[in-house]
Image (cartoon, rainbow, N blue to C red; front, side, top):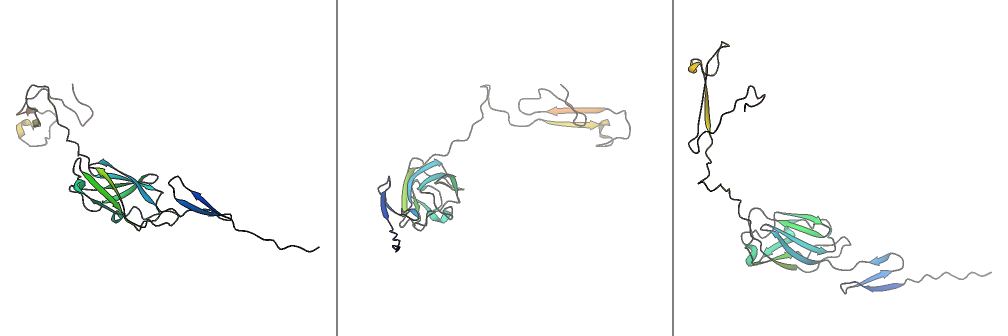
Length: 203
């Protein structure tokens, strides 16, 4: 019986992704990823932090600060490149500056380097910009009083004298006289408490 040679045909398939980009696949290795990575969004998280969303997740090296450049009126006192870049969740990268802060309510643009690649090796190809608005630094918390006047921030001081300081700081006898005093130039002394070798404080 004569055998016929086995013919294997390579079937090429074209598929369109949700973003309208065509991907090619073959019957032997599965889907081939040929989609370039891109910036999907930029959002200021605080006066010195910006999140950059990528599609898809980039290859190692995407956390180099030199790959990200800030510009625009909202840049404020931020340096051109962040001090650090970290992965927050999936393809979201958080850029952090210190010191410095962005200009409140002004647009700032983050441009991602064209040389970055995704895990499949696809290069971004051209610089990708994304714009967000600057966020204000929160005002420091202010101490409040009860309305009775300015706050007393001067600490109370106290002294302890042994036998009238006849032998300052120590004594050789068990029966001694201790002289205690306390003063407060602000609101005055409200009470005094005592402790013996840190074993507890008197009421």
